[in-house]
Length: 477
Ligand code: BG6
Image 1 (cartoon, rainbow, N blue to C red):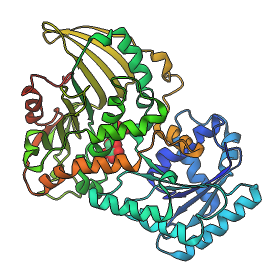
Image 2: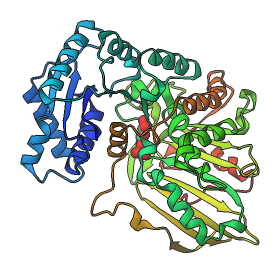
Image 3: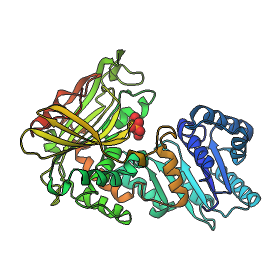
């Protein structure tokens, strides 16, 4: 792998501590970092290099998934870390940064390949990208890459504006948009596992009756009121993670996608997603917000009583949707998607229901997290008969090794320049285009907000959405 400098904006933040440092450390242990590597952490706080390194050490001791077994090795890893204060609007700080990057490149004899990782609020993306450009940080001889996290924009218009601004400093080929669902091991291996399972099911003679994609959580808004109350489930999960799951699944049908065509097929899928007119949104979308309730024996407060949330907030913490893809393979198959907070369990899964004669049903279940598995279930008149694991589970990470974290996979891909599992602008734009009428309907109060008790599976209307078509959500207990 080519040598590189990792310039981390937001180096004292939560994501860096919990995810980015442990991921880099894991890559280091596995010999998957460039042999010459320099990391420059940036933040508003004054910190010496030593304090910064010892903070990173703390985060590794707390969050490293395989633990720190070799203290000497860890010290070696930490020696690559430097820190600098940076105020995102202060141009002189970028000049100082350039100096530091160059000094390190010279002393380590590094080719000036630079990865700029923006682990900061999206409101800073434009300013930072412009300053990288103006300061000359982005005009060295090596490659440059910009890594950003969702949300990419707040709606269609702002996403387009943001993209235009970013494009003044970085080309599309240089922008790596992280959607951490694309880094999940089960999503990355979905095609392979799915096709192994379909051959067991003799899929060639079967039809898919419906698809259900759920990402449900027990967590509430936590400490993120400021962000979440303006985003809601629709922007926080649906526009990005959920539509990416939909794309990753549907590109596998009717035939297996070729790696180099993933982007093209994802675009085709998004283009053939039947648009929903804002006046018709109520027929396809259910919107909810959690009330108080009990989760796993513990009482929890309702959304409007959470700290930092207005007592009359109209924000959504749940969305269920019925989608339709207008192509020869999918045209008769409803696709249901739901995601929400403070529900009865934490589970991200896809259930494919096959058409059947009589009352028995065959289901193919893809568990994405926290369990990782593919299985088939046969049920008869609602009764589950058997649960036969058929997928090559051994191809996944075993528990002893610890499942790979999405960040390890994605940071490694970004370092080697593989964009397969990053969100391309075209997909992002097409998903905002599809979601925009929903946002308009929310804004214009065209869709009721249903309060659901915490610890359930969302509002009853979510069940009714499927019942209308003769289906029900599988595995709600
Ligand atoms: C994040 C959302 O992108 O994904 C959070 O901002 C959500 O609100 C999280 O809790 C869920 O991710 P995972 O990997 O736990 O399913």
